[in-house]
Length: 457
Image 1 (cartoon, rainbow, N blue to C red):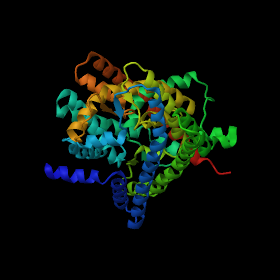
Image 2 (cartoon, rainbow, N blue to C red):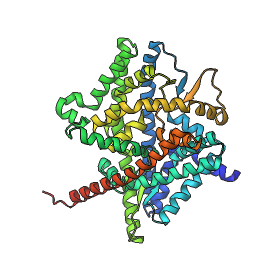
Image 3 (cartoon, helix red, strand yellow):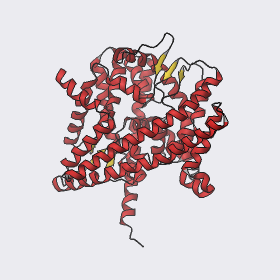
């Protein structure tokens, strides 16, 4: 077992850009790509991941600092510091049983492929860390390691099934065929989907503000760099920056919004040839089978709706943190709120108005769940990371993937009446969600096939 731990921990320690570059290269070779093309695709994916990380870090180091200054100006004491996802999942990988989740996910994927229960070949192995975290949280409250891994395994299965029933939605949003999205954050659709359907009925279909429409209506003010500059200046002013520093922050925010779409194009460059090779390979050898490559969410990062809404709602998030009774979390590492904004983008098909409504309504839940789990992360930091927080201070993760589902799972395994009731409601919603989203996805498939079959003028 120690040898197994060493092998898999060594793979994880490579870091996401290197690890996934190696994985994509090997997949390309497996699908009979030329070695040079496979290596090129893998390296391009690694560059894309590294690039996204650099721009996110750049954004957090500048916009995040200004937002924190705004909180400090209010004089409110919030005792749990939000780490964001990189430190949180890093601590999860330090859990003593973490290494077991890696082979478990691989076996689950292979068995489901063999039994024709999924078409998704999940190469997004970096997000095994999310299953590790689920296993830890359930184990922490139940003191049963097997139960923790049972819930985490169920999550892995649900992610694959979710990838299957949203693949054409992903293709329409990205323009990349043959890929799917097994990221855990999209399981939040179980709770989001009914809400989105209600908005679809209540709000006129014309209610939408995306970057393209902004450009058409307001010209230069709809450009990424201009929007970023204006929003950055506004946040700088709220943070008490002087005139020069406010302008500097505006330029920095403009740079981030400009660079995100440029970096995101590298994902298409890397993944398209591998997807084509996988399609050709499977058609020749498995005439009756169809496979998709399961990828991480940044394949959608080229759309500016994500970043615009994330930045615009930072002041709203900080205001919530200050005024919500019982909240103890100071949002910092997770200020960009990826795990709420991106699923809303996915399930509203990029409708900016609906994304904004969902984000404003969803933030309080995220803060309260982060407050709930703060003692857990503080304990995890002490046990796996050797981090001792000062007395009266805790660590938290605001914007945690599937916050609501993890809260329900941990409450339910403890025998909480509220948790059990919410678990039963979640099961009912899951049935409704998977039936509805599959029907929607087939409609999108027909739409895409119709566009492909349409004669060129």
